[in-house]
Length: 202
Image (cartoon, rainbow, N blue to C red; front, side, top):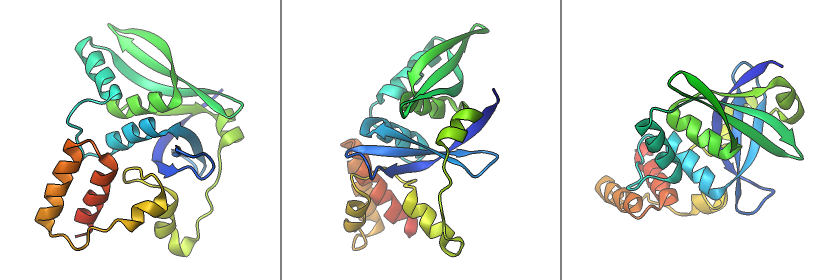
């Protein structure tokens, strides 16, 4: 079976499951997307790894795993989403230490959070993409706008609508930077992302 490489397109709030998020993976040499439902903690961990500007004051679980692996010269070479059963994706971490490869079973959300931290490629098999891959319908005239509404590339929000309500437009840049520091220090990454977005707009 041939492997297909995937990129992370973004994270969106799941409209079907409360408190869950949809991680959208994009076929590298194609137009299909692979949506995977993940939990809030894993979504936050993936979002933080995608964000270069936000540094948590203490390591998250996946950061701890990365630090541990670095200390003992273990490298995650790639992640393979190898099975789909009853809507559940199964993944493997392909690790290497002293030129010896090991395959470790992992939840897909954890595997992708680690792949980001190790800058490891993500793959799936063609038959899984054929079975679960979708084409997102986007109006060509408003492609950029709709992509942003479908996929939340910033951090995650409890609800997409709720994230739009909180406005920081009345604040100065200095006040926004102070609020950003406070949000990161208190580990409120959702708020930090909203503030950072406002700073970026300016």
